[in-house]
Length: 241
Length: 311
Image (cartoon, rainbow over the protein chains, first blue to last red):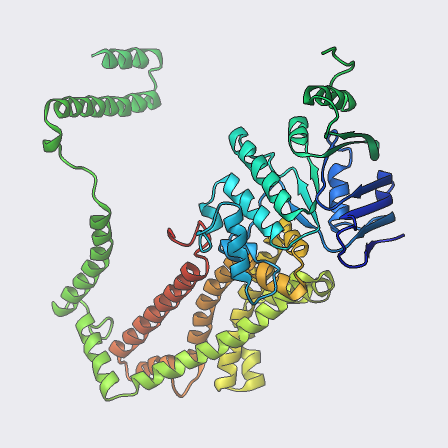
């Protein structure tokens, strides 16, 4: 039985996370078995899969939120997470929310810079309840990135947003990831979202990674979409182009 | 006139007394409806500016809410002045006011008031600290809950005033007995509401705090206690009320100073005006305590949509 193992400290060549032979079970029910995964810094990985296939369980294990029953997760430092809900503290203003967990001295300045990055500069002293869903989610992104994570875990962070806001968020996330270059694992239901954002798309089935697709220079997006939908069991046969 | 004929049919079909009553009330209703329609019609003809305003503004409603008790006091004054109320039973408000001024300037009223407030404050501070500490402990730890909670709940089932004779045997009739009683009354509301508040904190926010790297102490300070605060402050409001009640009882049983002593002393000499004055003072301080609690809620819970104003 192994738990989080810190890798030797930051060298750009090191991966953001390496998972070997991961096993995760609730009592007798095995959810993840023999799962291997490696995410490089600056790499954007999307994880697709049917409901209940263990996507979120994997993400929670990577975040260190749940104990694992076997294998090894090696990460240089604590990952940052953005959930489907913004999880902002309603009793703290925006900068204090973003600075949650930052060591004190210039926390406000750092939080302010992060808020500028997500387009909410100048609202440091505003309150979460005055934000729209998209704005709240942007604050949650700022809170994750201000920690300078080497691994960023996104658990369906755009699922509750309307279509237009979601497109804007996609652009923002792409920009932020390009600037900060963390390794990213995005758990999503949305095949198009995965294609739009990821360098590499994984499909999870039966507690392990069943299919892998690299989007860069791997044919037109429509092909990828058809392949992925087939892998997810939505299309039974490949439709000729 | 379609409606009355309908009523006739009704009466024919079930000609009992009950249905007759129903029909009667129906008839009234119909008449009222017709009147209302006529009004509406007239309104439609007149210009909007002439339309009579039936609804009272917020201001006037507030004015009425204050005028009513003032009128009550005025009636009391008039009855007392006219000799309808014996001064032995209920002295006039003006007499009570004069007594208040006299006692405040020449007597020991301010000193007694100070003594009472000090007792309340000391008892409240002790009881609230114990209640909060125990509540926090039990709220966080299942082991603490198993060890403490049942015993506390059993003691809580005793009306705390029933302990008074025992407390007097233990501590005698003195400051300690009074402060103890107040503390006892304050402990339980704070204890219960602290536990409740901690249990109600959103576990997703606690999880988020852990992800952001907060240690246990930071987690309590930044996430759990702020989340529990609405409930804790509700406990404070309850506790203020019980603190006051405990103090009145303790001071009435036996005291050499304080508002309750003033009242019992006045009873010896049938000074109804002083007794009424002490009652009024108790009431005013109760109102003040509640106002303080509400002010605390407004300040500390400004973020909360149900408490703070717009911000």
